[in-house]
Length: 417
Image (tube, rainbow, N blue to C red; front, side, top):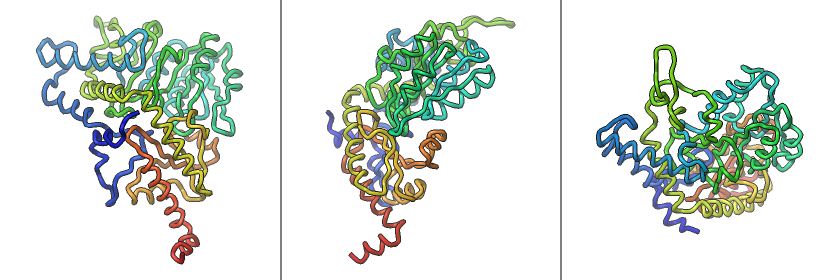
């Protein structure tokens, strides 16, 4: 394991105070904070070798190209890409990666009556693109339900993936509930000749991920949830499938030869990277990979499980708290979604903010799941490598204070005691 107190010094923002209180940042499922090493990599690029990449022959362009493509190689190593960097496409974010697959694969290979299997717990980014392409192509959407503990119903997964299934697209780790059996889903999909798409936005930053072991055909994730900058995402895909697809965007960089009436396409991965890319953030993503590999993803996973277990134990002692999803930390990443009595999550978040505690409140871009859980919204505390048990204690203490604040009788009793 690593020394959390020492590691926290790498993150400048953690020394900040909010409303006169030390910042307790528990909104990591939305975006993580950035270590000095990542911030410095951005500054170093702009101050020392800012240039466009690939086509330039001068020194700055060569240095920028080497750093950018070096970052791609680091990402490939990080997720253990069997084919190396040629399978790693840089996008803006996980959402764009999923849209790329839905449009470039779905528009070419989906037909009327084909089936797309999703689940009720998907993030909107893994719902809306499939809704759009299904409507355009006349495909049919099928949804796997969850059980009473928030686990994906494997029996329904087995029933819904059938001869007409062309795409199975599932989130690896929910941003509200738990971890899903995507490896088994991939096996079921491939038996039917379907492709398997995995939304790895919450899994890649929080646990060791091996795309070969997952058995998927596509894996999408974002840099900003793994200590990297915003504006950079990744789509990993099997080369034979990527080669068979048409480009998602057209323009510079993704071409090989352009005539007035037609064009031919560049090699992978540049076939899917039109125009000047997000060079600085791509390079900084490589710095984030270096940072996480320095910690060790096994250690990241172990730390988050410990935090989740401790938070669930402490918060379960509050009689008004309802925690969603499996209680076993082995079945979830460092995300704890909850409600506190009749207090609206937005109100709860504002009260906690006054104590310097940042949590998420709302539907978490998972409105169908909120309806399935029979609630309008939830509060959500999510942890990362720099969070501590003491911060969870502060969260629980603040929740108790919020309970008294919203319950006049409890507040009066506290004043009299």
